[in-house]
Image 1 (cartoon, rainbow, N blue to C red):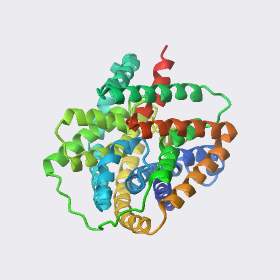
Image 2 (cartoon, rainbow, N blue to C red; image 1 turned 135 degrees about the vertical axis):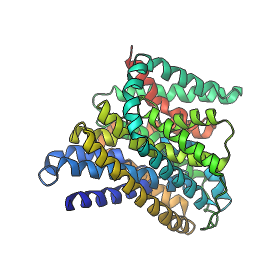
Image 3 (spheres, rainbow, N blue to C red; image 1 turned 90 degrees about the vertical axis):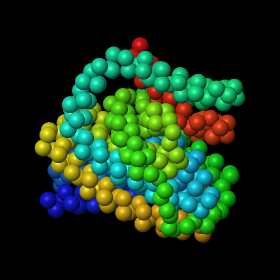
Image 4 (cartoon, rainbow, N blue to C red; image 1 turned 60 degrees about the horizontal axis):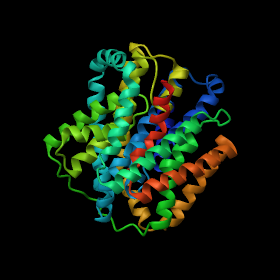
Length: 401
């Protein structure tokens, strides 16, 4: 019991660090855990290792909203929230954006865990039904993502970004000499590119108001919880899809949704997607999230009792992470008002490069540079950054032929 509590606390602390540090992903920590599994098993049970990895993963999905809002550095799950949250930051309402994203995370997490019995029944049928057509579904989603930008200039750059990211993904994921290929590729596309852009363009953070008044209606919030939970469940089943694609689909179905409700929606999808990976692990024996895939390789396929324990654990972690996010969000906004954005971005960029070099070597560093350039093309051209997820979607489609 004590070891499980210590594993939970260690996971929350680690998830807080990875969440607050742009470019440092939970998959990096998970890969270190995987490499040290034999040593860890001498002192911890496989259940405790699973507790650590799950606690870290859930906590990360809450805390990484803070740098996404105040530094404009988001991973795949928060890309669509950047524009409305940055508008709030410029108005001095950054904590309002953080609060809305956090409400989405905890709300969708609660609803997702409540719906676990239903998902246990639906997931096997849904996966079996869609599996033969997954490649076609991904292809249609990829084409739809591009043609949504009907303006010729946007359509052109969206096509360039999708083709570039897709080609990059094919080359990188087929490189047998590259260890942990996702680390340099995703760090460059979503992390380093945003850091360099911040380094070039950022000014001092406007003065932020700690208190915030949430005006999203109960009806809009409830719809965001429901659609966010369903979107998170679907993308936990289908390969190549991320929270950004889930948010696009949910927003299209909702049609009329205001800025605050949209932040609730995007905040919830990433968290509930991580939590519902427990269901795919239990029913189908896989996870679409890297950190939980490592957990599955160590813990093996959880039975009903273990699934219930882990589901309860996510609620505990979600509650703690909610408090941490709101408390630390205020402190981070206060700190960023008083430090130089350029120095912060430079320090984090150097840390990302060092981590990639240590984990993936010089080839990984080269991939990081190319990926960063590709990410910058998306940012500078104004193409939606979620198009960069083609780096995963295209290889998945290609592998079916």
